[in-house]
Image (cartoon, rainbow, N blue to C red; front, side, top):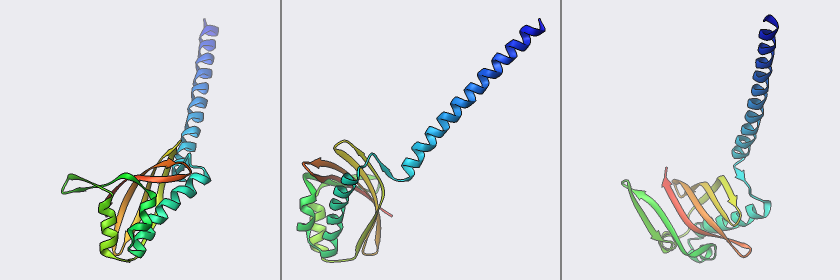
Length: 159
């Protein structure tokens, strides 16, 4: 009887060790995923990153120079710009952004990519930007068009 109890305890202990090892493996995999997220670039090839950055650079350059013609080639024809005003959705054709560039003229603008995720021919990018003295949380949806990345949606929050 004692031998059966010892064998049972030995088997249970072995199962516990296996379970702990599996949890450790899962924890290591989760840490890998978290590390990848912390690097803020998921599934983005260097070529994708460069193409997306090119579109974002044109978005900022248009503000620096106060010229919407610089931004137009990097936005899709039917692109939108959206935000919340007093807890209500406001969504406009991208022409609203072009009008802003042209009406405000040249001014300081800068950005830093906070996160970038690519899934095949689509991407989601979050940037922290500053236009003049105003800072924004900007999020963009982009779609690959041939070899170029086009911004199809810009949503933002004023910080």
